[in-house]
Amino acid sequence: MRETVRFLLGDELVEIASCDPTRTVLDWLRLDRRRTGTKEGCAEGDCGACTIVVGRLDGDRLRYEAINACIRFLPTLDGCHVLTVEHLKAPDGTLHPVQQAMVDCHGSQCGFCTPGFIMSLLALWLNERAPSVQRIEDALAGNLCRCTGYEPIIAAAQRMDSAEREKDRFVAGLPATIARLKALADSETISIGDGERHFYAPATTAALAELVSTHPQATLVAGATDVGLWVTKGMRRLDPVIYLGRIDALRGISDEGDHLRFGAMANQIAVREALATISPQLDEMMRRFGGEQVRNAGTIGGNIANGSPIGDLPPALIALGATLVLRKGSERRQLPLEAFFLDYRKQDRQPGEFVETVLVPKLPAGALFHISKISKRFDEDISAVCGAFYLALDQAGRVNEARLAYGGMAGIPKRAKAAEAALLGRSWDEAAVAAAIAALAQDFTPLTDMRASAAYRLKVAGNLLRRFLIETTTPETSTRVAGLLAEAAHG
Image (cartoon, rainbow, N blue to C red):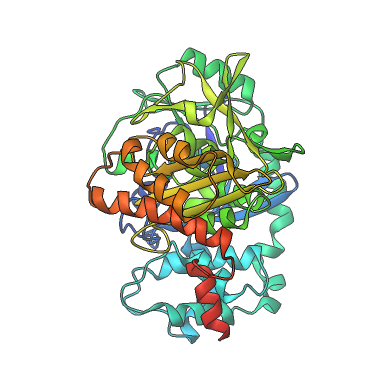
């Protein structure tokens, strides 16, 4: 085992031999390294004031990602290249082109949120050329500004000169940075702690299986987009922590013909791209999956194993008939995703077992599929209700298979079995939908909370079924906000 965490902070090699397993990157930057340009706003990954850029090796490529430092644990930076806003200005005082664009477009007033915006724009600058306004808005959806307004910031993003990109010292230094990170890479399991609690980071699935068997009480951490809040908001002391982010074998995505195979650590950016090949509605839904910083860190396996009743992916995957591969030691078992969720935050996962793979079937020819996410904000918000529906019709237009899955309607993501039964054998029409809507009250007794009332949730759940009918029987009728916005822009 290796008993240090190693990463590059700008050009500096950092080696840490002792560390609280859940110390956040934000606290370390501000309190230990005095890099106070990175701000704390919400401490839960919503506002983006803490945004930094992290470069991670992907084969021979270095991909830079904007992430929330407030919920990222410091030891998870092993093998990465970390950039903060302090790294942007050149030694001679020249502003980076991203910074200069913000100045030229008056993109800052009070300035508190500005470093986070600049770092999100830096990640965009390093990865993409001439992004569209839509792409810029997506990249900035995880950054909140309360006084400047977004138009000047978007204008700054458009002004970033792609011709200057090749002269950028970060771009010019890529070969050297990649070489340094490759020299740090190894297949050793990291073992580090603070004398009381412990952090492990295996590099292979075999090492992970052994660790989880040895420490069945451990908290498994993928992107920490929720577990981070257990620490910053819930003040929980996790021990031990096993981090999965060094296991390249868990990041893979492959097309197996009739289904897609996802490693549990495939991040939401890559998952979105793959699921979009199944349905453009999955692409639209995942565009609203947190902010870009959350999508960069969050994983398909973490979103499932977390067991949240309002996670956006499980209803969609249940409707598609997804299957999990669970591993314990060298043994594996397959389980339909819908059977994995037993009760609120309780899953069919044995001590020492972990989610290794997610298998997602493709849609057969002629199948009908729909997904809707209802939330108070369009971007970067948790669902009040999420509905995902799959139907197969016979040649006479009657429903012979139905999977109706909801999030936000119960303590787990759950199928509406009574509503499904109301549809089977009937023509796909208003009468069938009315019967299914009436049956939803047998399937669910939703809660009233800060996001929605029980009555609202039940009403919306039914309306989503009617929306599904409208979209599949009168496709000329647009029910999608994204579609309506596009029509408005062109009309």
